[in-house]
Length: 165
Figure 1 (tube, helix red, strand yellow):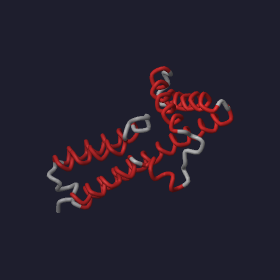
Figure 2 (cartoon, rainbow, N blue to C red):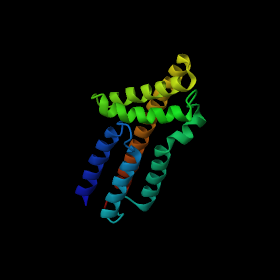
Figure 3 (cartoon, rainbow, N blue to C red):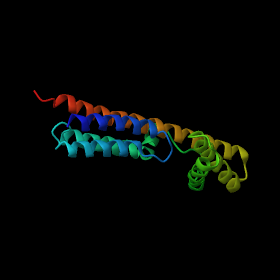
Figure 4 (cartoon, rainbow, N blue to C red):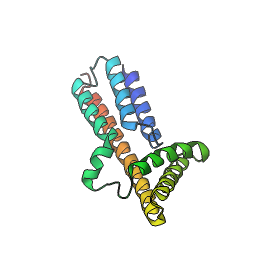
């Protein structure tokens, strides 16, 4: 049982660091690993209550793009088409620019710039939208990373607090 928990923690930590790669849903994967480990150990060491808390943290971390605007992180100057350009550019950058993570970020910003410039024909607006795409990406990575760490902390706390006597 202890081996499963140690392996789960190690994999959770690895996934947390891998989640800085775009399109890798860190909190969701970390939560899933925790849930599987809890199931395999009969929910004895990682309790149902801990799993509920981890689930809520996963939801908050995964869907951060919906609540970040409440804290002033907005998609200023970024249209729906610009956001689509960001996604398509990020995917293209991942494969075209062979520098891990950086290729995705460059592609994402370029995708936004191209779409917004084609749409408005104003470079200043396109640059502002590109900066917004970069800011949103960076905030998303930070939030997902932090919530993955919180999920791991709840997982470990549950293990420690349910230690057999």
